[in-house]
Length: 159
Image 1 (tube, rainbow, N blue to C red):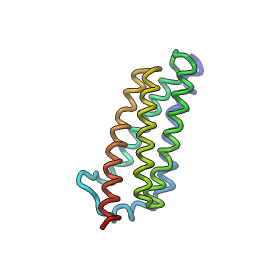
Image 2: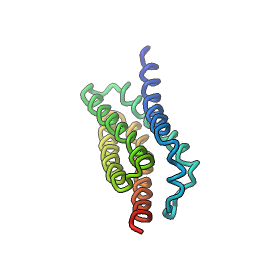
Image 3: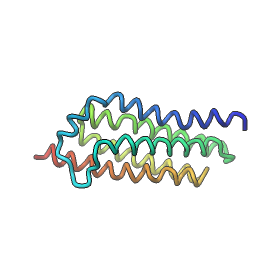
Image 4: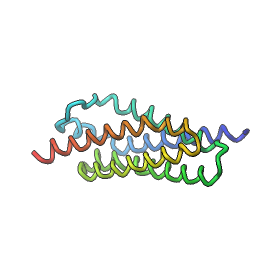
């Protein structure tokens, strides 16, 4: 019990750091992004970092719930491995999309991310139902990001 605070700090810090690093790698790419034709329902640019910060916090809390769970160790290990894998895939998406402007590739990368998030939710559910529920807003946002990504590709690359 005494070591739980370290688990919680690590669980919350890791996704926040992933988001921060991805943001640093793509920070000079927003002007080019804003110049692209945007689909209906595109949110204002300021909303993205707000939403992502909330989602990274929810992910961290979910991972913390799994890490401190009393569930069987193998379930915890498998769930966290897939969680960290999806977090790595998440890290690269903004680099592919914003920095490299690989719009279609980014869409398919996002589909991979979506599938990994879904698998993470399923695995988290075995260990901690609240952890699984905390991942649902992330899945919904990535679904919306998929719509935006594909729409931006279609509006700008197929002119």
